[in-house]
Image 1 (cartoon, rainbow, N blue to C red):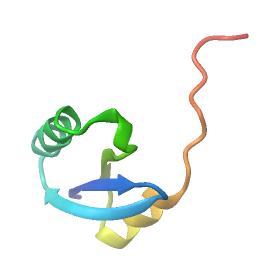
Image 2 (cartoon, rainbow, N blue to C red; image 1 turned 180 degrees about the vertical axis):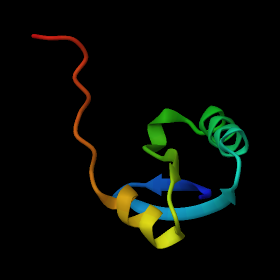
Image 3 (spheres, rainbow, N blue to C red; image 1 turned 90 degrees about the vertical axis):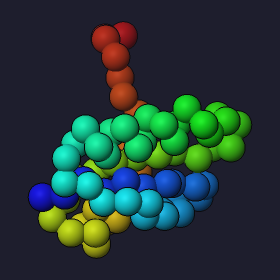
Image 4 (cartoon, rainbow, N blue to C red; image 1 turned 180 degrees about the horizontal axis):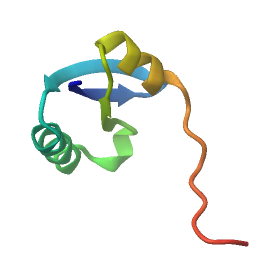
Length: 72
């Protein structure tokens, strides 16, 4: 299954940037894009592992829960 690379602009607007077969290649694209994007823009770059582009977009359009680290 391929890795899909997306640019996510507020409010959850998805833009497909690339598709790679190797995780390392997709990760490199995302890392480079994140380094060159100012945080103030609110733009995210994500990669997702899916069978096809439609499935990847469906998974990315679902808001993620906030991560909880440790216990309160």
